[in-house]
Length: 357
Image (cartoon, rainbow, N blue to C red; front, side, top):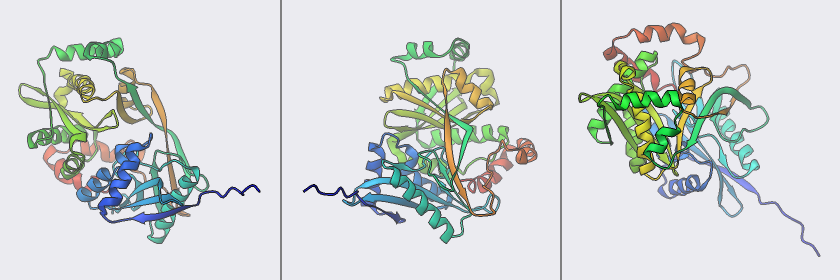
């Protein structure tokens, strides 16, 4: 007599405590999953919470044997300016549902929404990963990601860059710039000074320095800072994350002198070579909004854009948060911010930016 097939049941539950064993289990799942990212890891979740004061949860999906088949990291974002939202994951360009089962995807999404309703969060934002069905809206065609295989050596990497962009790198390499890598206090101070000036020039508030410090502390050897200097002064700097053989320059920028010196070009080329030395084979240039200067810059390096899909669900009658600085509603604020003295922008920026999530 043939036995009837009985599908494996799945259950979901929340984790909200720093349970060392559970967090190690989650981290192992992320590291083993082909779609896992640095933003799914407990390191990221705790860094954001420690630095910006946002609560966190993991939603876990397990099979009948108690094995993890899916996770969803959530940050509980509260902001007087930008509203409340459950975000997966806070301050990240990824970190949405990570699962190996379609049913797990649906259950994780539903549990996040149930939590939002119970705790009066008007929206849930899932950044990347499989998109749940039903009442979730998929935002497509807004952002693109840029990932490319790296070349075999420094010279091959230079030749892999399209001709016009390669010429810019060569010009920068002739400018007697120095490159250093580390995560010591001086590296952190130089990076924050450059990054803060860079985002002020773009018209956006800078994140708290505590966020950069927390990420570096949590990720240890899986994060570092590369800084380019001219005459001993930092002119370009980037904080990068390393995950399963992929390097991701995440928070980077340059001073006004950086363009003249081609310091940003030297920075990214140097980072590719540094990442290869660390054993990386892929370079993730991160996401950019379609049609922006950053989008064009990455295409100029020979990276092909890959459309990203984000899912969002809102309560009836509620509109999704708009935290995109490119939005027309912020045009006046961006113009005013660009005119602020750097000292004022650096005092006000972190108070505002930590509510963006």
